[in-house]
Amino acid sequence: MKRRIVNLSSVQLSTSETNLLQKGLNFCPTPPPPSMEELDRDINAFARRLFLKEYHFPEDIEDLEDIPPYQPTIQEKLNKKDRTY
Image (cartoon, rainbow, N blue to C red; front, side, top):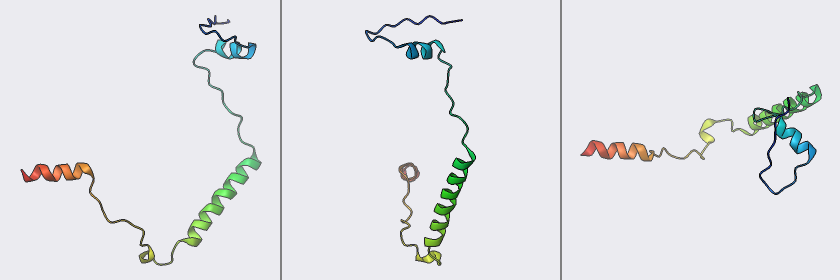
């Protein structure tokens, strides 16, 4: 059963575009499953990034000085002001 396509634009549709529109609004193209080689590459890349993050992490947690001090959110500030009235 072919669906009727009504082109309301001035652009001429190609055959492939018309065929795609005939599949309907629920059509969703799905990519093929990954190959074993792709999976191996992705897992190896993830493991390498994880190892590098662990290697460059400081031995002592106190060496981390980049942690900003606690800043209350706007909502917390507003709630604090409400309590003072």
